Amino acid sequence: LPNIVILASGNGSNFEAIVNATRKGILNANILRLITNKKCFAEERAKKLGISHTRLKDNWAEELFVLLKELAPDLVVLAGFMKILPSKIVNNFKIVNIHPSLLPAFPGKDAIKQAYEYGVKVTGITIHFVDEGVDTGPIIFQKALEIDGLTLEEVEKEIHKLEHKHYPQVIESILNS
Ligand code: GAR
Image (cartoon, rainbow, N blue to C red):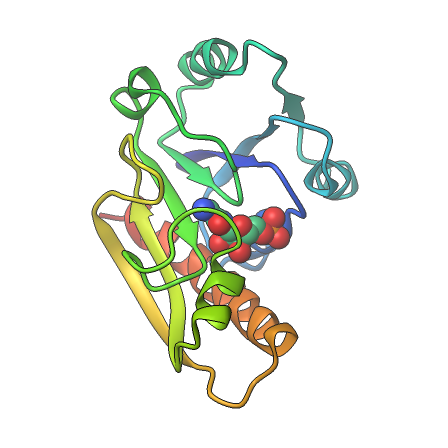
């Protein structure tokens, strides 16, 4: 099986969806490690799911580079990892990211809220290869969502549903391409 490493900084719901997809046979991959850069709920999920976990320290970028060299994953999966990766890492590994808007609209933090407050009638999710920018890099997959008349909470729920459904499938297709 191909090996993947998942990087997260927050809730970890995408991390959990990816783990569950491997257990259901939707995603045929071996998850080597969850890597976080701070204390977060994703770490609790890793414990519960029996996935080994490393929390990066202050010198996070160098530590991450060394760790990835050692683990040598086929793909690095960003799942709410809220740090910009240095070129040394971006240029040495195949890395994919998910973002909760239709890029290039609303990059950065709180994209769902940014889109909602702007008043867009259609938003969505983007899965893309990672370069040195903030939520930039070649787009692999997008799914649109009509949000006219929904509350922010409803939009958040629908966006996360789309993420949890599509991210494992897109990872599977990248690993098979
Ligand atoms: C997800 O909505 C993901 O798209 C977003 O962080 C959330 C993490 O949720 N990523 C970005 O905004 C990247 N710029 P999770 O921790 O529950 O998976």
